[in-house]
Every structure is written in C-alpha cells, then in structure tokens.
Length: 170
Picture (cartoon, rainbow, N blue to C red):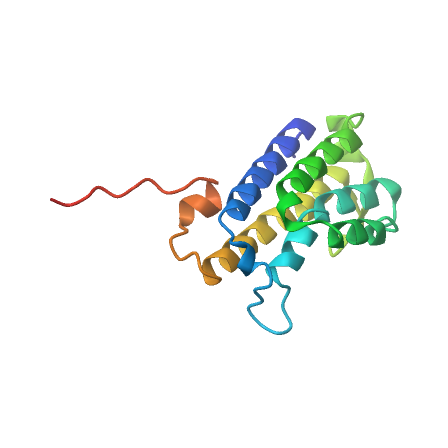
C-alpha cells in the first residue's frame, strides 16, 4: 500500500496542480456552470478546498459530523483565497496524520463515504482523499477550459505547468 509520506506527497502535488489551474481562471468564470444541475466553478473550488480534510477527519473520528462546518467555512471563502485554503487543507491533513504509522495505514480501519463502512485507513485515504482531489482537479481543468481558456493543455492539467511553446515555423 502507500506510506503516509507518499500519500502526503501525492496530495501536495494535486494541491499544486489545482492552484496552477486556479491561476488560469478569470474571475468572470467563477459563476460558470456547464449545466443547470452541475456545480458552478465557485462551488467546485469551495468543495475542493475542504473535501480532503473532511474525509480525513471523518475517517479519524468515525463520523462526518465536522463536514457541515467545513462547508460553511468554504462557502464564506473569497475566491482569491483558494490557493491559501488548499495549502491549509494539505497542512491540516499532514497534522491529522502526523502520529499515524505506516503500519496503522494497513491495519486501522474507518468509514469512507462511498467506499464502505470500514476499510483500512490507507485504502480509504487513496480511495477518497487522493481520488477526489484527482477527479475534482480534472473537473476544474475542464471548467477552466470550457469557460474561456481554450489554450489550456494536458501539461496544465497533469503537470501543473504551462505547455512548452511550439517552435515557430520559418
């Protein structure tokens, strides 16, 4: 399975990519919604800013009672604070897992939304926190591209960097 340090490295990378894609959004696109029943970009950013720590706290506590207060916190977040909120979330996850050993990731169990009532903690971290960050990062990329950033490319989405300029033909 994955070690705690590998997990923290993986979610830190996702945070960096999310922050990069966020930097490509124009404030006019925050209210972009691809369909009437879909989240807006603003709502997606709010959710991204708390979904990881919400899952970790729920797994540790054995319930997800803290989720509502996290959602209220996210709803109050000014959009320009998204990168700082993502940084705080990764730091909070690191703090929450600081005393957990790699062995505990394999043996300790807890609930994970959509996965099962009890799964090994390491599996839950991957199947909830990491998978959610990857999936919602991809959604953020697609929203950014659809709302007026057609120049975004695979490099923006998967590497968190602008693409290399193409050589100019003579």
